[in-house]
Amino acid sequence: MNQIKQPLMKRFFPVAAVLLASSVIGLQGCSSTNEAPKAAAAPAPAAAAPAPAPAWKQGMGADMSSSKLAPLAGRLTVTPASEIPLNTLKLPPGFKIELYATGIPGAREMAKGDNGKIYIGTRAMGRVYEVTDNGKERTSRVVVDKLVQPSGVAYKNGSLYVMAIDKVLRYDGIAKDPNVAPVDMTAKFNLPPEQHHNWKYLAFGPDGKLYVPFGAPCNICELPTQEYAQIRRYNPDGSGMEVIATGVRNTQGFDWHPVTKQLWFTNHGRDWMGDDKPNDTLHVLTKKGANYGFPYCHEGNMPDDQVVKANPCEGVTPPVALMGPHSAVMDVKFYTGKMFPAEYKNVAFVARKGSWNRNTKIGYDVVTVKTDANGKNAKITPFLTGFLNPNDQSFSGRPTFFLQMPDGSMLLTDEQLGAIYRISYSKK
Image (cartoon, rainbow, N blue to C red; front, top):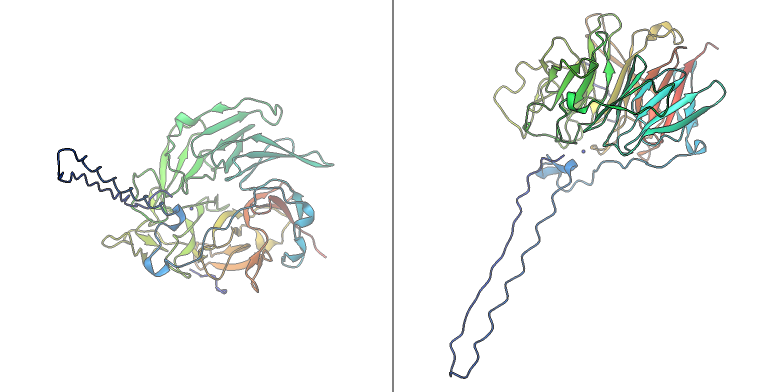
């Protein structure tokens, strides 16, 4: 396992509501029968219950109680193309990055439809967008609005699948009929209700099944029920649910190796254990039902300091690679096209959205991960950099998800700037 070497949100935070109330009712003795009794003392006002800590602070230890670290606010308005600093972005020689589409605030997962259409999920925006390329220009529209974090989108056999926290919708024939009414499939998917880390990433596997993650409903906690911190798969109609992995805190991307057909997925480590632990990780599903450690064990060998049990890392499947502490690893995509040089064939591209729970920021980039034939000896190499300015710790964009195009180019969403970039290669 290689750790990247560089300078290098939750309902479960029990707070006891304290209500202090006292009333003293006293009748003073009267010195004469004509003397009126004194009024009863007014009850002391109840102390206001302290406001609960925000979800993202759950799991913060006493040693970090004074930390000023907090999640970074996303930009929920349109960023003009003129304000997207492409000139700061760096790629290996021969590669080029350009704007494919803008004006898609909160852009996350992409799915390629028919007739040159691409569908984009969001989280905070509650929208799903459609971008159409007619060969001369690209236009966008909102497919659906006011959903609860509909970040997961997938496309299969002419149908767009959209999954929010509490809803699953299927739009049949949407490429030909933009106004088609969705089929509500929610009841078939048995969605757990908690929002935290429960936003989705969707993908159809080589077996034709729909794969869906259900993240942990906390930063670090004993799971309230076993329906969280797992990856499931379903038949396209929502039947046949199977749990294929457990102990997965928060995966925001997965793909199947082009040769071995094994599922690879990213995972976010917990917050508030310090700047340098635990790492975010990259994993391979070696067997159905494998356990990846949450909440007791991180990185395959690091016991948690708050949720404790005997032998916490026993039976835990270790990661393929350590991806940097709090780097917010998002999508992983194996390159199978013919445009990029041969050395990128079947190589994993990983987007790292960038840290907030770290005093010195890392991530805000795309890296490649190469392993040997057995998935060992991972080598991690920077590919796309320049979103982060290490001198003043400022950042522009936050890369999130990939889509390989038929011509071999790669699209990449930027959640912060609401943009889609196109990465291409040509020999000089």
